[in-house]
Image (tube, helix red, strand yellow):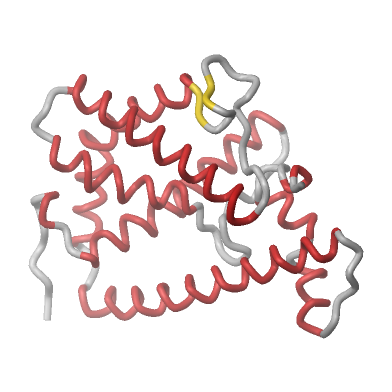
Length: 219
């Protein structure tokens, strides 16, 4: 059974949304890695989870930009820029705030940059969000949908379920690793083999690299 291709961005299915999220997360991971390598001459693993290469911020941004801007594809670029400017800034602020409150660390800090808001967002990156919105609507999003339409639906659906189960496991493992790393920093010795493995493979150094060298900001 082959699912009918979707051309109208207002009628995307969960199948499309999932693959937009997955592709956006993986591409975002590579983009951030290349950026950090060029800027800091060091590779940072910007994955949000300890396994795989998943940058959740990019994945969520891909989905939100698609859902919001898909309705504006017939609008002029100024409207698209302004909407993306606002949506991207709100998403970035919310992600920063959520990570700090939930996990206790700061993944990025723009306090030194011009016109920043609590170090979570700043003017220059908000402008990037606006420009990205135009590129997204005019170039990236249509090609994303065309690419996903070429995926065999039955096989793609099976992979989607497996990937969702893996992401659930990966997210749980990440939370456990973060909790254990906090205990490690308090001088608490591992209580079992699982915690020994967490210290060895997903310890403070590993998490510090993942979270943009901000792990030490934990209070």
